[in-house]
Length: 445
Image 1: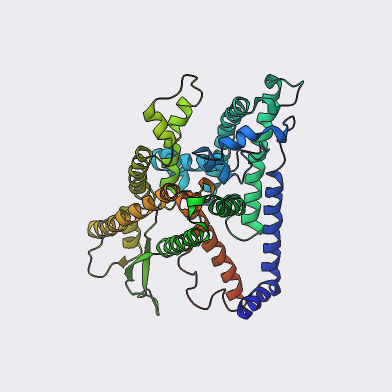
Image 2: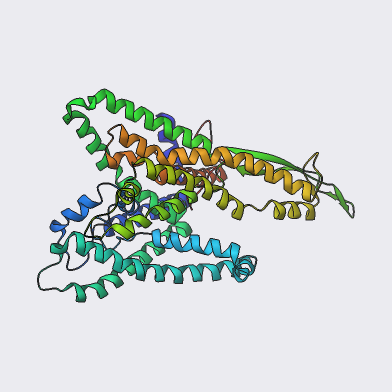
């Protein structure tokens, strides 16, 4: 404990780090404050139907990522997810469309153009999602709108406010990245997830004591131990890296010798990170969109696909995650390009011929890493459903796996990495005496 307090004092002594931490806290506080600012014209006391709707099922995921703003009918209800969706689309276009491929190779100027297109696409997605959210609000909590205001007149200004709220969140995230600590977009998602943890913790604790057959305190302690073990396993495997040695040939330029050093290509077990889960979840929302407003009810098959604890849902979910893991890894890591860059810089893998043999070797290693990685990420994704089968409350079960757990692990590791780099540059000890976070931190996005 004494060492921990001394580390906090060292963080506070570094002026630049102190300012970055305070700016990060300020911007996250602004984000949390905005999550409770309800849309003008909405009566917060009459949102019980919307909040009960998001208490379980797929809609609870949206509410978790927005930190409760979704069920509060807040100006931040749509959160940062529209920007994430636009970023994913732009990444796919950068692989499939030559125009965007060329733009991606232009360096900093190309990156600025892609960011500009991403923002334009984000606005387009917001102008589609905001009316959909308002229609859902009308269907679930029609009485929440103040008397004397028609939904027709309410839709236009509310759509503008929701779109502006999400763009403001994007601005906050960029400011955290520039002037704070960590990746701002990922930090905002993490804050939204953590904000739901205390309430979920209290609900789960209360349910274990009120239900006769729930197991009481013993079962709750077992849940905490399982959650701790899952978090530790996630950290260990997210940090897992396969290092491929690369030897660079010596060359003489004048009287000086260059090259000859041995370096490594770090191939991660989770090269795709949380993207496969996000892609799979997006597809699993399709049945929800088709049958949600049917007055005669949905078929049993569609109903099963809307229940994230059902067997058909989780079987399809696992298959999609494994498929998207291979797909996303293939489009983000190009063994042929890596082999060409290595050959161009006079580098080679010991015992492997340059060129095609090197590309095949890297591809083989990537495949061997992707298979167990995809299986583990699929297991993490269905952990909330397994926890739900053991009578864990829906809100608390979301922390046992899925996107929320991997985002928390990735963002915390990345943030600790940045804080430790600031401390080491000023000749202070790092955050940890052992098991430091260097050479392994992964941001959520």
